[in-house]
Length: 387
Image 1 (cartoon, rainbow, N blue to C red):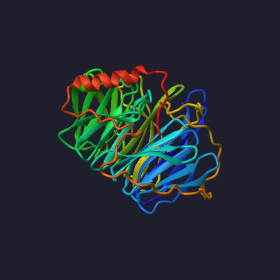
Image 2 (cartoon, helix red, strand yellow):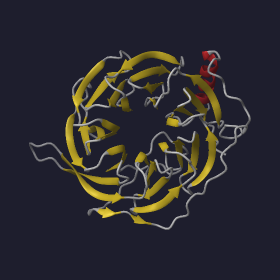
Image 3 (cartoon, one colour):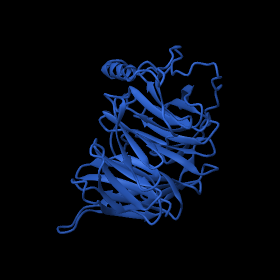
């Protein structure tokens, strides 16, 4: 298990988490140990993601850097985007999807590191994207005040919903039966079967990060020291606790045997790991913490799990183990940088496959989206079409 965090100072930090067996009367001890630091970007880091072998980072320098976690080397950089890379999502071991302030969403082959398709997704910035657990749908939000649904089975835009303000986070629930859209300090909870808002959660301050702890419990962090757990059905705050001395910038949650873990990163420089109680009304307990001495911006976790290498856009990226003992600098490996492709012009089709089908507009009946989404999720045997 390895914690990876990016910073305003352009540095990527890596900490291997060592778990010491519990003594007879003591609980198991967790200790993050410095494993590497790497300074490859020329501007602050803005996004990080991990699969079973690689960690990728996005930056305001418009590049995506790739790190081989097994060899601990810099694997190269992707330079297709012409704006800050705002979001990175792995889909298993075979695909990476990136979004940027240039309005593009790019689908990458995570083996050859080639750009399979580049689409003009939003008229403004792409601020966030999320992929359905089935791998058949994706959602994106941008500064054009739209929420867009992407049909990954047929490789095209499926639906455009106009929203009143610019959203900066969108996220599917673990089951994919609901999704949330964040605007400033409010979280709109959407039900997939109705494609409509079932309720709104209001946080104290602007929200910086959310993560689902279960299908009905959402952890929310913002421009403050506190993390809150909300019930997505009743919209009630289940509990809150002070996590840091400064605003929380990012969170990540995962489950391993005997532990449901929440990881938080803050501008105060600390990365903290918390073990969650079965009853989410009870605040979590601190497992361990480490001070990077930097202003952290983004967070990822590289887990010691095996992933099906053959899976095409599976629902989770589960990494393989790396055994390293001493802190080190990541070495640089010779690697061809993926060159920029021609950005689609204003008259080019924005679908993933170029099939020429027009997306459903946001002012169309809700049933149009419902029918589209239902049909996509029923196609269990169809493979993802990316080219």
